[in-house]
Length: 308
Ligand code: DHB
Ligand code: FE
Image (tube, rainbow, N blue to C red; front, side, top):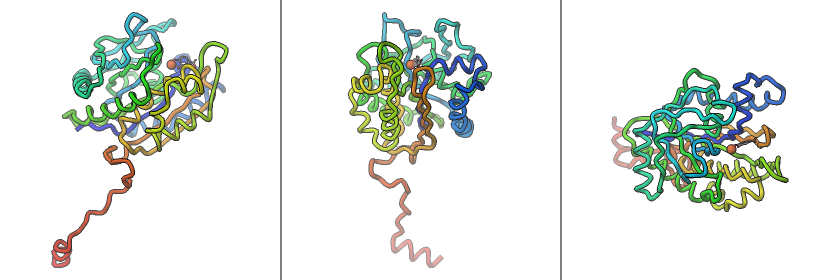
């Protein structure tokens, strides 16, 4: 059985990718940010997942305004890197997993999530920056990637509630795959940021902190936040955070926080990052104790044990 062992939330600010690509990570502006990701890079190297499902949003690179899927699942064998105006980032192409992606589409559609099947897709900073933050600059990405693109660019974006439910269905889809695979899921984008207009540069640390706390302990409450609340309280682009709820839904009811990092600013973004491990494979129901109970020993069995 394939299993989702952990979720990673991270911002995907394009300036972070540019800093890495142009050798500027040692500049004082960037040092604290990259230092904050070092323990997570080590965690990723130790965890060594076979597959990463990366929930991200395209920024009018793979999809222009002609076609905008609300949920598009990348089913290709390989995904080229998009040219976002300064040439494609100098990162390796992303290798997909068409068989598992096709299985996920089938499982999700049968569970009444009407996914768009995307057989050709270029990937922009929304996906490549999170890979860079967690894997650095390898010659080839050491993981197969299933991209899940979510429309948060053109109104209306899906609700947090729908995203959380999709995450739960993704968990079911992955667990019904026959191969033994270690899978992680990324939720990318956010945290608070507004790129344009009179409110450009808006940061709401209180909102971000409450979101990170809720992600660990109370995802159901986060899932009830209406889309417009993100925009009003945390900036127009904070709506990207609904993608973190897909990640959280895919971990099951209980998750353990193993790493958190928050840094302001990178470009105009409040950078947030969290690593959550699924508790007991996320199979437990809400309210269940994290520790497994000792097996109950019957009187008969006790007698047998005493005799032997
Ligand atoms: C910025 C952040 C984003 O999430 C994005 O997609 C583009 C730009 C920024 O803060 O500059
Ligand atoms: Fe973005």
